[in-house]
Image 1: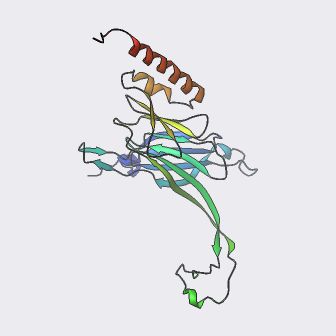
Image 2: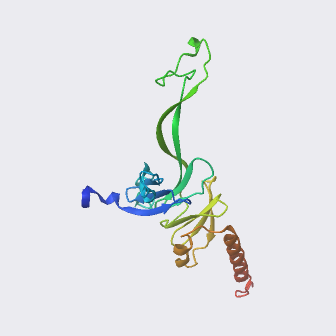
Image 3: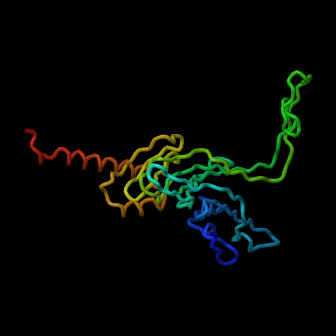
Length: 244
């Protein structure tokens, strides 16, 4: 059954999170249907001097799909809980998006040229017979209408028992943190099959919901690990239990 809201919208169109990139030129929104919509700020011009504050749709893509955990008999919603931009290093943009269980790294890039004149492909994309090729051609780039592509680069999954409620990119721009109600995991952007849990489950969950609202300094993580390590060693070194 589909529930209609005002203006013909459905429940899946309700925005669940918003996030600006570092320059403020791009605004990413995630909704309950698992979609990410990116808006781009209009540049001010002489004909429209007050248009700089307006944002128009730049790209739209489906980030997450509904899943079902058969081991726990639990339905995993596609709703986007958090979005975090990575600092821009080249012409492309990168962002992290997460639902309750899975974090994805997306690459947002523009393409306004296409290659033509392949040796092994026809103009319609079909493969040519290699034995019929009598001369080599140098492919050329021809202009085309601007197209914005969103492609998944990494998928980080199966590291949280509870629902992910926050993610944050670290100051080294190579690692990031993800948190649920009882745990914080430290990830590397190039490694998807393992993470490091930097907060044990016995610590307070209030800290987890508040600490990842902004970028986290790597020195803070290092300091916290050292303090927790000393605390853990002190607790285990206490002579509360007889060895006899």
